[in-house]
Amino acid sequence: MALMPWEVNMVKFETKAVGEGQHPDFRDGANGDVVVPIHMTSTYARKKVDMLQNGYEYCRCQNPTRKAFEVCLASLEKARFCISASSGLAAIMNVMHLLKQGDHIVAFEDIYGGTIRIFNNVMPDFGIKTFFVDATDVKNVEKAITERTKLIWLESPTNPRLRICDIRAISKVAKKHKILVAVDNTLYSPYLQNPLDLGADIVVHSTTKYVGGHSDLIGGAVLINDENLYKRLAFLHNAIGICPSPFNDFLATRGLKTLHVRMERHQQNAQKIAEFLEAHPKVQQVNYPGLKSHPQYELNKKQARGAGAIISFLYKGGQKETEKVVESTKIFKLAESLGAVESLIEHPATMSHASVPAKQLAAVGISQNMIRLSVGIENVDDLIADLNQALL
Image (cartoon, rainbow, N blue to C red; front, side, top):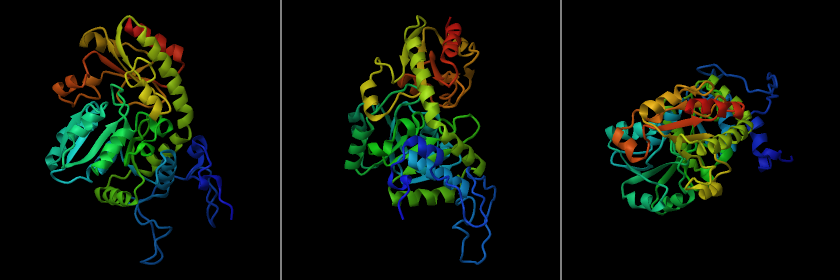
């Protein structure tokens, strides 16, 4: 029997996003659904004690709707295995449970505030220390490694300063020391970057963001290639109980179908807005990997297929003036989160990174006059006009 295109990896990203893992079921009794149904069940009946129906036992362990999503996302992230979780932080905690008392983590210093909160306020209770470094220089990462280091945690770009690290070079260092590398790929999505191809061992997503894309679900995912690592993470996922609802997996699968279309529009808008901000007299500095002024502009072009749609910038004013700007937009909604069709604006120091100690914020350059934008897919002229009136 001839292989179908997706079985020999001939199908492109856009085609996989629409159909991978979602082939109509034509078995006896099935309806040939084009869209995978939402399997809202907590458990599965069996005819005999030792015979599971299609391998399904209990919804925390697995669910057909979840399976469809995992297959699709894995194909887009170029991973062999995917584990869907109840949130992005749940996915991170899934990885954290690979560690044991006395282990060390080396992490990029200005990552998502929720991740920093885990590293600062949760993992120490289990005897696990984190050392934050400027990972834009590979040497800083290698210097921080000790015999107790078991995990290197990266974001590229980081949130909210949009700094880029050399994933391939850091992964080579990690392999030399037999250390796992995990990359939170949320800000770029699998459409723009595939860290496993660059040598990383684990990729994490908050599927709440670009994967879902519509601000209507909470979810996360862990993706890996190594089968033994997958088996351990799958066991932990089930044992800890961080499974998502079938409905959220359904929404995430729906989101994947338009990911490529949305990301193109997101990026087009973000590039124009970044250029507008860079020329604005009230703006001190713009952080966006698509600008040639970005210090890792060339590196980003080598390891990613775009610059994403998150922008941060420094306003020429103090905290009160900066807060007035984010409170004055009409189209940009003042809200945390990112990666959805609507544009969002926020003040990182008091919102997404409010749980990070003030000294740590200052050390990584997250100042009181920093503003972060999640650029949506609205008309870009309207978005620029909205920012212009708020900045004036």
